[in-house]
Length: 322
Image 1 (cartoon, one colour):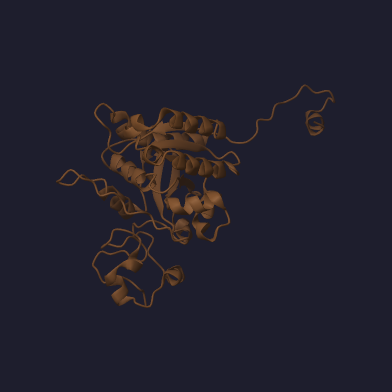
Image 2 (cartoon, one colour):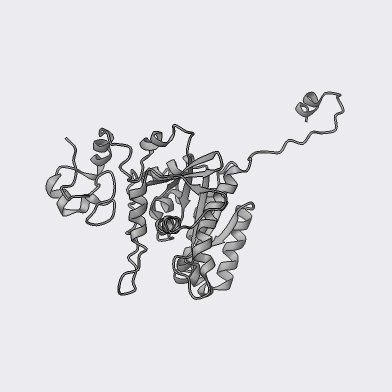
């Protein structure tokens, strides 16, 4: 029998808890009352045995990837950044912009198997009657938590199925300090499985935590660069409406370090709430990030083989001898 929540419309345990709007359904009183025997360590084991319909619309898990693999293997984009860097909010903004007619250059929206999950993210970015915004709750740091958001995009006769991974900053911090840390299993999977990465730099953290934020960003970026093997990285400066408040020496040191670490990367400034005259960083640059990811993924990677001037009279033998 399926362990589920009695609340109408609640997607737990497969998706978000309706009451708390997070994946932490094990903390929900309604869930616990009906499923008192379920423990965190048992949740994945229980849900693995269930057969879910592929069109629930909730965020995918690694074992669900086969649902969108009939056309071609999907491309996974790893979202990497410290806690509260804005990874989840960025994804919510992407969906909001596409829903309101925004376009990714040369690519059109062609569907999604996770529309309910996208819609939940977008709800957080709606401005309430008092002018405030309820940002998403922190992403679960449980090592078995995965949340993959799907976009199907079309360019002429070319289709791309893209999965954006959302994982907590705490998990990636553990991973950046020790890739074999028991608490960073999902970060290891994301790093191994991703075709490209979006590396988030939190402008607010650089203002508030300064040197400590620099150390965290440097540590995580260094670990990201360790085994890239040609996979592209797009650097995203989040909360850039606050950029003027970052100490210039701190900003310059981060920019220099990242340009040395990822020499072929593009750096883009984004925000969810631009100040007057800063519409570029909100309505244009967020989608520009996805455009740059797609451009990078379509570029050939690997070494360029130059045909040498042959001294042996045979290009193959001459190259082999070098």
